[in-house]
Image (cartoon, rainbow, N blue to C red):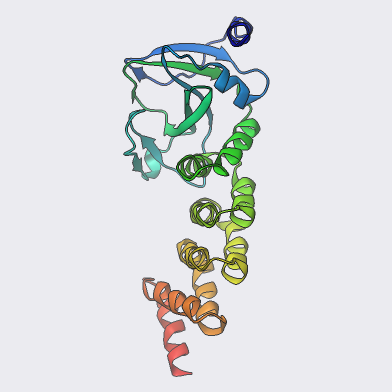
Length: 264
């Protein structure tokens, strides 16, 4: 039955218009039209006789202009933050093994070492379906969760999904990772979420990550928030961390806030 489903998926993909497909060095690449439930389609392309990856392209977040490259089998990701090297797209790839998604790669459009792999490239994936899939995978085991949250951080339109993970993730590590990437990608919406985590998250480590996240916001936002936390927060640990991150700011407003606090 699985082979029948796979055949139907491949038949449904024809004909296909010309589209962006990354340069996968050393791989066999088959283009398939996206159809139906995204996760089910991805795992249906598994093969016991091949090393299978399934991928697609989605719009990149303009709030985080980076270029990300690595080989499919190398965990060491190279991230470039030069604004003149910004990629408008992100390629998301899923390793499929025994009918399960086992790892994720989120890469900018670059040449990718993939010797010996069979790549199924999905054409026409709805970005909303991609966000929903990554958000669901972010709630799974820790290794897959980290990679899914990282992919979301590169994904245009993912801010609300990251906010949901930061507020409602069942594990502290999920909330911490989501808060970290929110601070990098969604300054306008992140400040309130980070402050709420500082005040209300039950885990001390998450609260510390939220203070760090506030420090990563633009100075016009971060300095007043850190100064307020340093002066008024009920937690001595939060006050201490807020003062520390203020001290790292190369901004006269931060020094003024610290001096004013010490004088009173």
